Length: 164
Image (tube, rainbow, N blue to C red):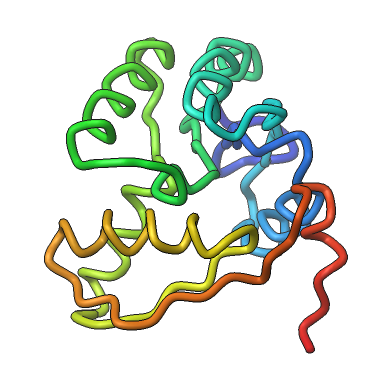
């Protein structure tokens, strides 16, 4: 629902409480005339990320958004096409008719749009996370010959990673 700060629309974005770099990154990508409303969920238990996101979705409707974005990558965890379908359905149910976009779906759509066939993966946390992502994207027909990780130990330390 457009407002005076977002005459083109309001976007509710769900991001991890412990990841302080995501808010400025989303703001840097925000188109003119869009009001980003940021909502946080806890990643205290990385293995429960999907549940934490789903629990937070109903609160996002309180800003009357035009779209709700699930801004984290579920494929960095043990994930599959079937799990993504179930997660998407649960997310949409909790959104109660508000349009939704999930990071994992958006990544697949972007890769297909640019005609990608082969790419590498760099995850922030662990090689295990990169391998989960490799498995997910290989299951969608992509070749992923290279994976690595920054080996950040705690989510809150991601903001400390420099470009170098």
